[in-house]
Image (cartoon, rainbow over all chains, first blue to last red; front, side, top):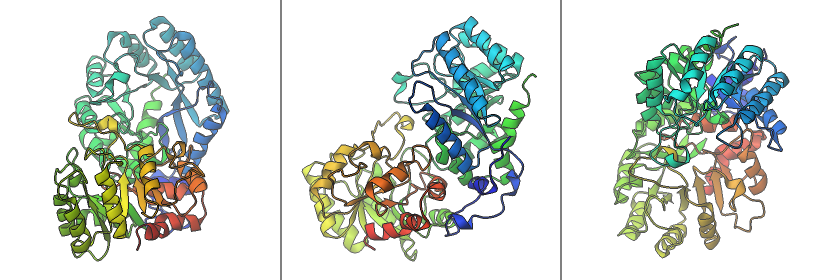
Length: 290
Length: 257
């Protein structure tokens, strides 16, 4: 597995410009991350309907190189939703190809629409069982606590892979995503399936993050990814205080400098940051069957 | 380093940490930021914004020049002319921050134009935060969109001798404000708080389109972590000389210091 350079790793723990100098004076010590791969638990490769998909994929790898991210757990979503089986199968085929283009660097989530139960389950079996995908990605086709999602969760439990679920809680703009899931939906799902590894997506890209953190406080089996474009000071610290650092997973979801900067700026100890950046997701990935 | 985009005081819809002068200074010291343009976060939702300016003045008193205070003025509210005079002459504020969406007026309104003209005649810089909070997370009480780029472009065109700093905005490269040869006077600078430095690299494209003298360092702290802005400069594909301009030299010029 490729390991990012020491210089780029400093992006996470250093205060390169904080010394009053430019990048040449980045601090030398970043001890806690030494040897530990930095894992982005939520990101995306481009759908091939975009004419620039290959260049876009290359750009995210370049950004990861510059920011010291070793592995990116990605999915590909179709441009038209809700996705039909042929559409999500096509996305996963593209994802499989991306995993081959960037071996060890890009890890794949299998995206399905749980409304197509049989097709979704077959696709997950194929992707996780045969193609080496590391988990399942669900979007906003259904709320996480709806019964239609349960067969997918049960299969994820059997395969011992995580489900990364799109999420958000907002007082506005709800009309555009009427079935988006929030912390309450995940809590309800977690009560029914406490052994499932559910990842609530992008705390910094899904609206009222304080609400989301509080809603997840009573669902100890649910993880929270730290991705998103919103760089509100204190987000990571509040999540750590209410949920515990063991439940936080570093992620970018396309917002690369915001997401790395958020972790770097968080007032947490280096041991805690190491868990968020690496160990927690390593532990999840290590549970996979086979 | 000079941060052109910082705040003091409470914000109505979210607790801010590090929002006192002492707290912000600690954050600045940790980040290596020597000076910061500050204005009242409370004045964004106060009916009478001048109360926020008074609070900021009291807070920064005796802080040895680390803070560069700006006045939040609402041209739709009574007494703004007196407030402008007080803020400039008594409070020694170097600029004005405008919140047309939060304060419910248009940049094209006559009173706003009169305020911009009066501030510019005093040599004050006009700062326009395009966003205070991401709209997705706003309280159920308010639904405040970002300031429209086109509306800003019209104002900028009307006051070619004024100095503007646009902060907490994004998407410039696809708007009149960020295009090359856009026909606008070069009387505005843009801060990097919400711009990308990798992938789409809006900072790099704006450096190319607008020139290296018009991009300035801004964090949005304590609303924001300062670290993303610092990191953007670190990973930006630009020469050390350009980075120094972004971090400090450009701000000195745009603030008239």
